[in-house]
Image (cartoon, rainbow over all chains, first blue to last red; front, side, top):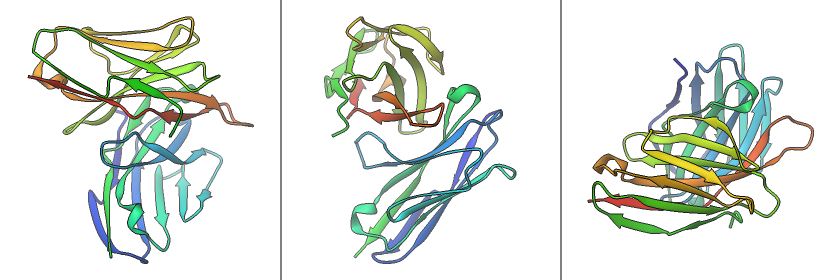
Amino acid sequence: KNQVEQSPQSLIILEGKNCTLQCNYTVSPFSNLRWYKQDTGRGPVSLTIMTFSENTKSNGRYTATLDADTKQSSLHITASQLSDSASYICVVSGAYGQNFVFGPGTRLSVLP
Amino acid sequence: DSGVTQTPKHLITATGQRVTLRCSPRSGDLSVYWYQQSLDQGLQFLIQYYNGEERAKGNILERFSAQQFPDLHSELNLSSLELGDSALYFCASSAPIAGLLIDEQFFGPGTRLTVL
């Protein structure tokens, strides 16, 4: 069964600290993996998109890694800001970029 | 602002009723996706249209249907509504990413449906 798991379920960190969120998937065949940021009650916003041939991709303070062999991805946030408080969702697409499977998300709270 | 618009923002209705959610994609985007996000399920892909044709289907119930019109706006029709259909419904449109055979999706603000 195609599944995407994320850990931790929730995370609280202090402003300025770094953190890493994890995503494990069983989707096969694999096309691409995306990380989204979703503020409460708003639509998700794309952070990174990686295909099977990419190991790492950065978007400002966000750096995503992908290990297609172990089917794992991580999202590292550097020097966190209060505005980083949101849910972070990992999405894996199957063949031809279809069959989108969403992870449950990690709820990040950044405290002053 | 992603450029994707959805109406209405909020909708309250009763069980057994039928509602229509509307989505206007970003200018130039041919693909429209519909997603459901409920508290206990997370985001779920429902259906995708490309230039008026159905392209991919996810976990869409038979009570739900969608279409994309010649002007590329899309509507999601939900009928025989149940309490469990209460959720946020998102629409996204997409544009190809240069050099890749995949699209980047841009999500609208969502329609919050409450079924009483």
